[in-house]
Length: 372
Ligand SMILES: NC(=O)c1ccc[n+]([C@@H]2O[C@H](COP(=O)([O-])OP(=O)(O)OC[C@H]3O[C@@H](n4cnc5c(N)ncnc54)[C@H](O)[C@@H]3O)[C@@H](O)[C@H]2O)c1
Ligand SMILES: O=C(O)C(=O)C[C@@H](O)[C@H](O)[C@H](O)COP(=O)(O)O
Ligand SMILES: [Zn+2]
View 1 (cartoon, rainbow, N blue to C red):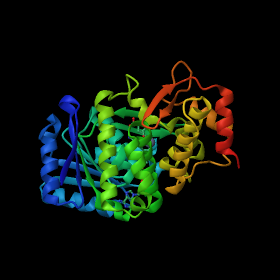
View 2 (tube, protein in one colour):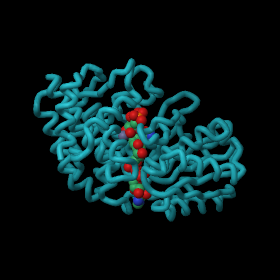
View 3 (tube, rainbow, N blue to C red):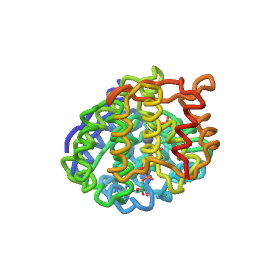
C-alpha cells in the first residue's frame, strides 16, 4: 500500500492511498487514522456503507471488516446508474441515516463509482450539517477523478450536478484490483477523464495514453498505476489551490464539460450516454471550438478525437436536439452574467476559460455533434 498523495487543505487535508490488493488490517488502520483527524470521527462507532447493487458484494466485504473491528455498520445499496443521483436517491439515503439513528459521529463510507460517491457524499454533507465521508472508489472514473476534490451532488432533470456541495472526504482508498470486474465500457469512461487531465495539464500523460491504449484497455497494472497516480496528483494540485472554484483555476477540470454535461442531460440520466462518454464528445467539440477560434492548429483536435476513438469512446451524439443542448448550457455552473463559458485548449497541457464563443460558431460545431 502506498500513500499516493496528500490533498493539502489545512485541517481538512486527507490522504489518497493506492493499493494493488486490499489488506484489511491496513485498510482498518488507515480508516482509524483518518477518523482520528476529525472531531466527529474521533468518537465514530457507526458506519453507514453506501453502494450500488452492482458493487454490493464488494461493499459487504468492507462492511464485514468494519463490523469485525467493532463498528456498528449498516449497508444501503441504491440502483446502479446515473438515475440514482436524484432527489429520490438522496431521500432514500437520508431515510436510511435516520433509521440507523446516525449522529454527527457517524461516518459515511461510499463504496462504488462516481454516482455512489457523489450521492453518498451529498447525503453526508447535508445530514446533520455534515458527517465524515470516506471514499472507496471502485470505477476507474471515480479513482482518477470523482473521489478527489470534494465536489458532491445530485442532478436536476435539467441540469447536471446542480444540487450539491463541497464536502471533502476524510480519506480515499483506491484498490486497482477492484477494476477487474468493471465493465469495459466503464473503463473507457474513466480513460476519458484521464485524457482530459492530459489535455489541460500534462502533455506527457496525454502521450502516455496515446502509446498505451491497448495496455490500459487490458488493465495492465503498470499503465493503470501511472494514469491513476498522475490523475490524482494533478487533480489534487488544482484542488489545493482553488478548492471551491473561486479563482477560476479549478474550472479547468471542466474541459469538455460545458458541451459534455449539456449532451448528458439532454440524453437523459440513466439513458445511454454515461458521463465519461459525454465528456469525450464534449472534449472533441471544445477542441474544435478552439481550432475555429484560431487558438490551436488542426493537430490538437485531431489527436484528441483520434485518441477518444482509439479508446472506444464516442465523439458525436447523433440525433440530440441542438436547441435542447443549447438550453441545457444556459444552466452550466460556470456561467457568469448569462454568458456560457468554455475551457478551451491553447496547446496540449494548457487551457483557458473563455466566454467569447459566438452563437454562430457554437451552433456550427454543435450541428456536427448532433447530426444524425
Ligand atoms: N465529484 C466529482 O468531482 C466528479 C468527477 C467526475 C465525475 N463525477 C460523476 O461521476 C459519475 C460517473 O461515475 P462512474 O463513471 O463511476 O459511473 P457509475 O458510478 O454509474 O459506475 C459505472 C457502472 O460501473 C459499476 N461499477 C462500479 N465499480 C465497479 C466495479 N469495481 N466492478 C463492477 N462494476 C462496477 C456501477 O455499478 C455502474 O453500473 C457521474 O455522475 C459524474 O457526474 C463526479
Ligand atoms: O472536480 C471538478 O472540479 C471537475 O470539474 C471534475 C469533473 O470531471 C466532474 O465531472 C465534476 O463533477 C464536474 O463538476 P461541475 O461543477 O461541472 O458539476
Ligand atoms: Zn467529469
